[in-house]
Structure formats: C-alpha cells, structure tokens
Image 1: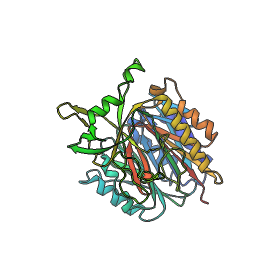
Image 2: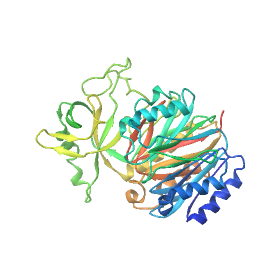
Image 3: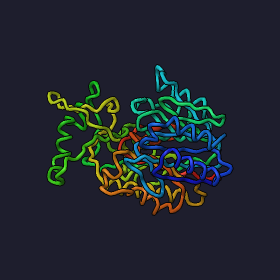
Image 4: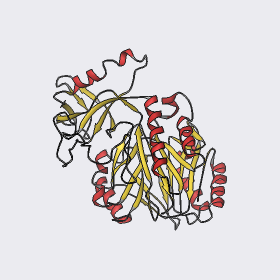
Amino acid sequence: MARSFSATCGPDGLLHHLADLRSAVPSASGGIVFVSGQLAQRASGVAELVRTTWRGIPACVVPAAGVLSERGELEGETGASGVLWSGGRVAPFALPERAEDPSRALRETLARVIGPRSATAILFARPGAIAAGALEGLASCAPGACVFGAGTASSSAIGVTSQGELIEGPVTGLAITGFAPPIVDASPAARLLSGFHPVEEVSGGVVLRAGGRSALDLLSAATATLGEQASAQPLVLAALADPAVDLRGEPAGPRGEPAGPRGEPAGPRGGAAEPTTPGSVGSVSPVRYVLRPIRGIDPSRRGLLLGDDARPGARLAFAVRDAAAARAGLEGIARHVSRSALGSAPRFALYLSCAGRGQGLYGAPDVEARILRQRFADLPIAGMHSSFEIAPWAPGEARLALYTGVLALFRAPS
C-alpha cells in the first residue's frame, strides 16, 4: 500500500497532509517528503513535523526547486509532495559533513548500510557536495544495489530514523531492502546534433581531439545548422558515452562504433531494447550518455573545456536542450517501465526531474505530470525538480546527470 500527495501549502497545511497519509497507510515502513519554496528553506522544521506525525517511520525530507506528483507540478511556489508506503525495510543514512574523501565516504557508507544484499539506495546530494567521479566504484561495496537519486535545491536533505533521530550530511539517503528491485529508467532532455567520436587527447579537462579532429572543429560542424532552425539561442551541451566495446569486451574500432555487427556499448543501453535487469537506464538514443556543460573554449589549441568526465576512450557528441526530445524521451521510458512491470504489483513511483526541464522548457505547466498520469493512471507518484540527477548505470553503479528525468517504479516483492 502507498499514498502520495502534493499541495501548495505552508507548515499547517503540510501537517494536515502528513496526518492524512499516516491514516491512509497504517502499517507504513518508509516515506519521502519533497519541499519547495519557504518550506525548503525551513527543511529542519519540516523534518520535525515528519518525526512527530510519522512517529517511528523512517523517512527523508528533501529540499527541492519544485515538487510534483501524479496530480501536477508545483514550480516557483511554496509546496510539498510526498509518498508513504508499506513494505520493505528502510534505513536513512548520511555522509559525514567534512569527509576528506567524499567518494570513499560514500562507498564505506553503502558498504555499511547495504553491503552485498539486493537493495535500493536513493541518494540526495547537496549541490557541490560530490563530484561526478565520486559515484565511480560503488559496485565494489554494494554490487547488488540499484543506486539513483538527485541533487537538492540548496541545503542538505534530512533523514528521520525510526528512533526519531534527525541526520543530515552532504549526501543523505534511504537504503531500502526487502522490496523487489525498482524498475528505473532515465532520459535526457536533449536532441543529439552529431554522432559519437572517441576522445583521443585530453589535457587538464580540455578535450583537444576526438574522432581524428579537433574538438572545436567537431563542435562547429555539429552546430552549423542551428542558426537556421531557431531564433532563440539554444543551449548546446556535450554528450559523453562510455567507450564502445565489441562482443569480446575489447575496445571498438577507431570511429567508436562496435567492431562486430551485433556489438553494443558496455553495460545496459537505451533505445528499444529491454533491459535484462531492473535498475537499468535507457534513453531514446541507442547510445546511453550523460550531458555536460561546455565550460569554455581554448582557441589556440582548438579544444573544449569539459572537465574530468571527458577522458581518453570516452565517446563525445554534442546535443541541444530540446522540448520535443524531452517529451518523447519521458514517454518512452514511462512506456518501457510500465511494460517491464507487467505481471507484478506496482506500489508507487518516484520521478526526479531536472529543474531545467518543466515549464521553462515546455512553455506549459504539468507536461511531465500529465505524461506520467496517462501511463500510470492513479499510481501514487512523488518527485522533485532537482539541481542534478543521479542515474543508475549498471548494478551498483550510477552517474551524475544533467537535464535528465529519472523514473523509478517500486513493486511488491514477488
């Protein structure tokens, strides 16, 4: 059993909604509350309300840029959404505030709260708290975990333990065991402008050459037609994919394509193919990628500053933020998640959507909430507009993503 809510409200109204959910789910085992506006600025006070109203129920309070449910999206308003569910075992956790090595602290925390068990780890990270590389190597400490999450609006998320303790850190989250692994999929709000090229030369985060050409030449070629298509200045981004491999696990040919006719990139991929395990991520592109900003140009070396994610061997393409692609991508992952859940009993879903999507992208409110409602009807859904996203990449692995929507469907144990 699960119930969700979303509402424009202050503390008094939130208390009413929390009490209603508690009455509707008498044997609740966990919950999440997303808050925006003034409620996000008073997240500690919200956590006190949750601790009192949901006494004995582990939960997490997440400051967000906006909140959403199957009923609609609240952007630029003070409001809240949340979900309370029964089933499974839930344990909040938080990283130490001043960890010398956040990546190591995250691995050690997941090893402690999850270890080798089949589990779900939902991470809510404060902006700037973790670098993209901090998510690498998680499979070594939690190989059976499905890891996903999002970045908060500003302050830390706050965990509420079953004993009533409030915990918070640069990364706060929930570890869920005893539930069937969620079906998780993700899609970026972007349209690719080019094919993928293997990165060949990098210096200090500046990509100098890829696919036998200078990175700046590749960008110029990819964006040559944009001026003919739109009056507004489009947001051009770098798209980074893993190195291609052939069926033997060997690096692919010089153009970055799989060496064999049936070869695919390492790990789960998007497109029409169904994932082999829950917790995989897809996209409307047959190549799975994450988006990164182009931080600068080095004219003298014909290079692009992309940061530490751009490493030799990775594949580079260029993309533009695009409403039609975002809508099609969300429709695709919603359809895929729904079909993958056939034969099971869905309980609830979480949807974590970048704050760079929403009404600012589509020019209309509630576009994504309507897509989810059309696909899942009255299934309880709660979510947020986030500063960044954490998308599952493979069992125990995750990647930091931008302009992405992450959809997770939780089901009753089979």
